[in-house]
Length: 272
Image (cartoon, rainbow, N blue to C red):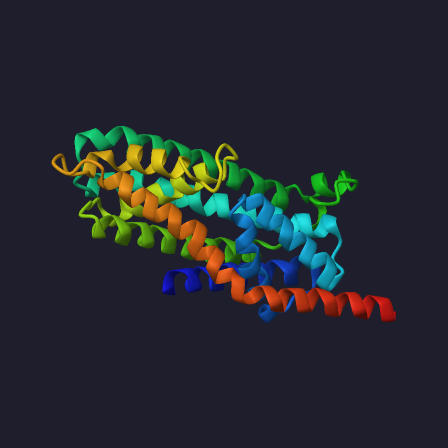
């Protein structure tokens, strides 16, 4: 529960800055409830959950769907950038780590994904910071135009929040693995967690079931005790259960408040 609440708070703070800096709207309390409630939708897919936030922003704050899409794209951009940055760390720290030879293939693969993702993020920032006229020239692409108004300091704030969020995920996974007697280095847990997240976003399974199991078993197989096969599978099932039902149950108490927000906004619109 502390992990899920901390995660919710960090995601809400990120959303709050996104709504304020892109659309000039948004209240922290409202967005806390909305983010929690949309956890129920992320059971289906992360993109369905983010779609729910776009609809909430439109109904609650009269933010256009294109602006809402911009806010969501900004979240996805920094989510992936922070994940790839943390994944890259394991490769940079490799000389300081004592790892089984069997894990080197996974570490090198994670490092490659991390470097590629960070490179893409850097290219995007370069475009928006140095070549802003490119975005201005193609003004018909409404969802991309607001990015030209975001400063490098604001990008840094977005990235730092997401880094803390994804480090928290890594600590959670490390604690889970350690409780099953599987003890990879902490930095490996943080880095590999980012790859697990990336694979969970691929719409090839329901609720991450199957994808989590394949990713966790593949990445951490070198640390599973030889006389205790099946521990990683059990650990992955607990992880999936927490991600699905833990987050969903956390969102249930906030549903009433979100519906009240939307009803109140509809009544205000009708009175006008």
